[in-house]
Length: 99
Image (cartoon, rainbow, N blue to C red; front, side, top):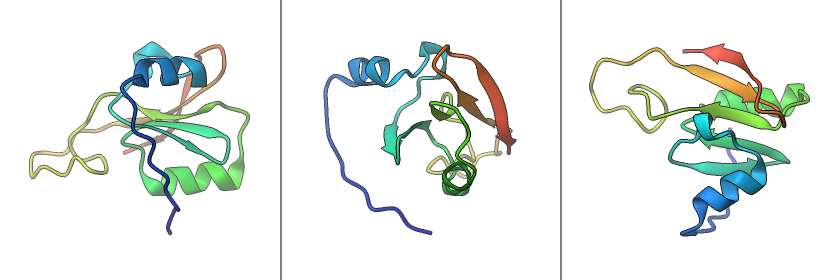
C-alpha cells in the first residue's frame, strides 16, 4: 500500500486544522488530506485504506496525542492502547478501530 505525498510546510497549522474542521480535542502533531478526508495524528495506513474503501460520511480520522506504538511512535517502550476515531462536521466522534 502506498500513497503519493505532497508536503506543504506551514507555521499556521492551527489555522489549517480549524479550516479543515479538526476538533481541538483531536489535534495531534500531523494533519493530512487524503481524497477529501482529513487525517489527524498517527493514523495507521490500513485505517486510511479502509476509510477510502468504505467512504463513510465523516470529515476524517484522528489519533489524538502521540500514543506509544502508533505508527511513527515505535520508541521501544510498552505500546499503549489507542483508538482511531472518526469525526464529523459537528465534532462528534466514534471509534473506528482500536489498537
